[in-house]
Length: 303
Ligand SMILES: *Cc1c(COP(=O)(O)O)cnc(C)c1O
Image 1 (cartoon, rainbow, N blue to C red):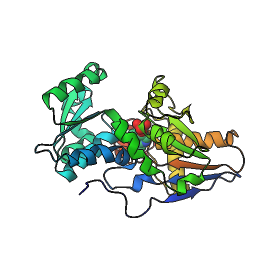
Image 2: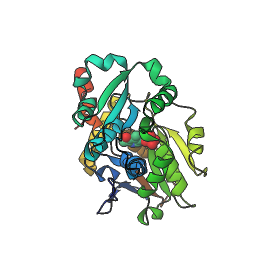
Image 3: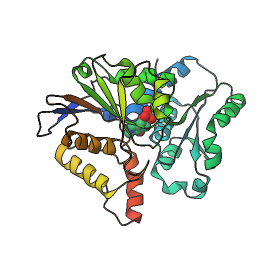
C-alpha cells in the first residue's frame, strides 16, 4: 500500500488568453494534494514510497529548509499522514523565539514536525550535518533542501503525460533545480524547456546537468532582485493575474515565472503559433507568510 498515490482525476491544463498568436497554458500541479503541494508532491513521491516499502520499525524523516519553505510544509504533512516522525532543520537560529509568528513553521509543528533551528553558518555546511545525522540515525530518510535528489527527479516524470507532449515549450520556476531536471530528462526530444531562476546561483546549471542527461533547457533570470524578495510590481502582477484568470500564484516562484513569461512574450521571445505550457508548482501556503511581512511594511497584500 503506497502512501503517495497517482491522482484519481487528471491534473487540469488551463488556457491563459494572451491576445497574441501564442497559446499559453498552465498545468495546475498545485491541485495535486491539499497539503503536499505541486512539485513537492512529485519530488517526495518515490523518496517516501520507497522508504515506506522498507517497513522499518522506527521510520524517521529528516530534512532542511528556510522559514517559509514549501518543502518543509510538504514533508511535515507527509509525516503527519503517514504517522512517521519528522525533523526539520530550519535555517536561522534567530527564529527560535519567534517561529510561532511564521505560518509555515506553525503548520509544520501542528503536523508534528520537530523543528530545530540552525545557525546560517551551520546551515551552509548542511552536507556535513547530513553525514553526522545519518550516522546518528542510520535508518532515517534524510531528504536534502528543496527535496532535490535522484528519486525526486524520477518523480517529476509524473508531471508529464500524453497531453504535455503537445507543447513546444515547457516552463517551470527553478529553485534547487530538481524539477527542471526531471522535465528535461523525461520530456519529448522536440520540446524546449525553460527554467525561470528565482535564485542568483551560478552553479545551478551544472547541478541540473548532473541530474539530467539532456542539454535541452535554458535558464532565465527571474529573481526580481533576489530570492524571496517581493517587489510591488510582483504583487501587482499576481493580483492582476488572479483577477483575470482566477489562478492564484505565490510571490517566490510561480508569480515571478509567470511575470517573466509575459515579459518574454511581449518582447517577441516566442515565435508565432508557439504552444507554451507553464507548470503551476504550487506553494500557495507561502502567501500567508508573505502577507504578514507585507503588512508590517504597510504594503499592498496578495489577494
Ligand atoms: C520548490 C519550488 C520550486 C522549485 O523547485 P526546484 O525543484 O527546487 O527547482 C518551484 N515552485 C514552487 C512553488 C516550489 O515550492
